[in-house]
Length: 364
Image 1 (cartoon, one colour):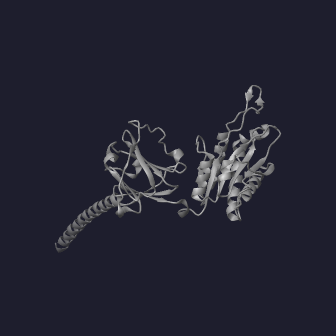
Image 2 (spheres, one colour):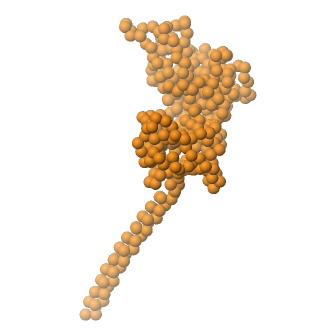
Image 3 (cartoon, one colour):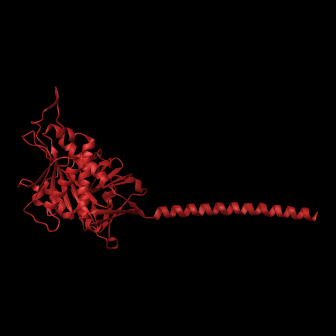
């Protein structure tokens, strides 16, 4: 009987222990969940800039037909960064940021915001880098547009219902900076000859240079080199504007990629233009131009025609105060070279030559 009683008592204790263990486990899970939610509510979330070609906001159609002015107030407590208030419930996934470097503009799309919110709420904090601020809206999305007084990289953090943005000069963020320019000059098409009867080969020169830049971009990703891309696609920023951009950010070099053409259809090969009137010690215009011709020529197993002094009409080269060169990657007026430029594998080889020239510049 005694043993039976002892066994029953032990069974009861085990049952109680299991019950208490279960209760403590529930309390621990609940406490952990509460802590996670509290942390998630108050933690700082870094928001990265969206690549402009991937932002997906091209269809934004302003309601009301005009931009409205933002309200600003200086606040010493938040002087290290710009502070943008957010309507309740806004999360990181509701925010898209675009840095329009060439135009010196900074755009923020905020979904889930009423159209009147920024009519009453003011932007505060460090506003010294801001020249103007406006907003527009479409449906439940508000677009904030800031005009900046220089070119900046922007560090964005979402914390406690506010978006904090710090504007930092590129040189304070990156050790290596280059500018790659897909030149907008279009070769004349009247010298093209038929590839086949009834079919004229008139490739879009802009598409070819843009494609070379995209292939070069893939090679440069992860290289530790910050690359700014200008003059691409339908971008109509002037050559002078692109030179000012390269000068402002203090680029290590500016490389413009262009197609060549000539009245003589027999002309072909790789060439480069440089500003011979502006001397930069150690590594300057002529050294950059020479490296580009040598590496691209070797990569495509082609003919290098050498370097040529830029004419006064080459505004980008004449106004750039950093090492700059235009590399002419082939004659589109030459039938054989035009065919090569239309091949993806050939454009891969051009991009590889450009990539090797850039690396050689830093290694040298």
